Length: 341
Ligand SMILES: NC(=O)c1ccc[n+]([C@@H]2O[C@H](COP(=O)([O-])OP(=O)(O)OC[C@H]3O[C@@H](n4cnc5c(N)ncnc54)[C@H](OP(=O)(O)O)[C@@H]3O)[C@@H](O)[C@H]2O)c1
Picture 1 (cartoon, rainbow, N blue to C red):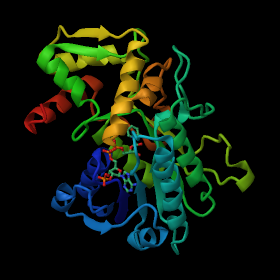
Picture 2: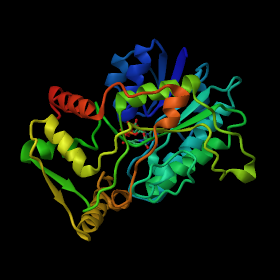
Picture 3: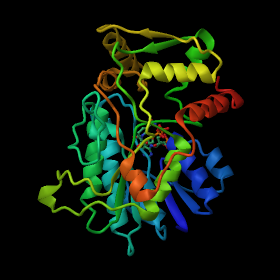
Picture 4: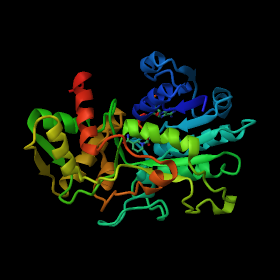
């Protein structure tokens, strides 16, 4: 891989990917918006293309002569379902269309989500071959994005990665938990039976994305009337092989910040739903989506988010560079060094 085009490069997952690509000696071109934070990308020597996911022409020019396209851009929370669909589904379709119009279409790696596949029964582990059954608006929008890129799989070599919870440098979603455990020794768990989680460190995910571009299996081209095919080829879960639930995760964080006796405060229903509803209401008034909302409560109340790392290990020879405990420790160190907590 000589030159890569990255969308969502200004975000958490994207920054980690750009950093890793540059370390691999790849020239990186990034799609950014006028409002994107680009200081880090400039420092990395990345080329910036100002544009939009809505404009297939400008996307085509921006990705010209790139041998790989990493479509990372996406919304993890939004005020409305339609907004999630517009960005996560329509946006993915526009990127795949622009790839298909290249004289020599690049490999397209789509960052989807485990939420697109959905949870599995407690005690089992989801494999890529299991039929997708998303339960949240976010999950439905990411699944729609997968189907949108699959439509171009006859012209574009496409691989889809479905990360579980991503954490690491620049990650904001887990920061409140790190802060509350560090300051108060308290960890809020939004249910009495928290589901086992699939997790991946952002730097491991970056490495896995590059492996997927280099040697991932590609999606099976499906005829237009079969786009709901559940063929698993070209899909990979991105996760470690440990599945802590949210309370265990709090204890891991506690150990990493020197608070081994962390108190896990389990919230009883309907309290978490009420909190999600109030946050949704306030978010609408302030016109800014928050990470805690009713849609995330749906995911937090699922049976299990355990997913299998086997396909990534067997096809791509992927293994996380460190265990989960060490990665949590490194994340806590990063937050401290960068004065995030
Ligand atoms: N974080 C996780 O735990 C996790 C887990 C599974 C999957 N994912 C997936 O990973 C991807 C990245 O997530 P993240 O955590 O890095 O999120 P993030 O930090 O919020 O970054 C999102 C990125 O997408 C860009 N973006 C959003 N809407 C856009 C639009 N309409 N047009 C162009 N760019 C747009 C943002 O650009 P601006 O900087 O300009 O806003 C930003 O660069 C998403 O597709 C998400 O679904 C994340």
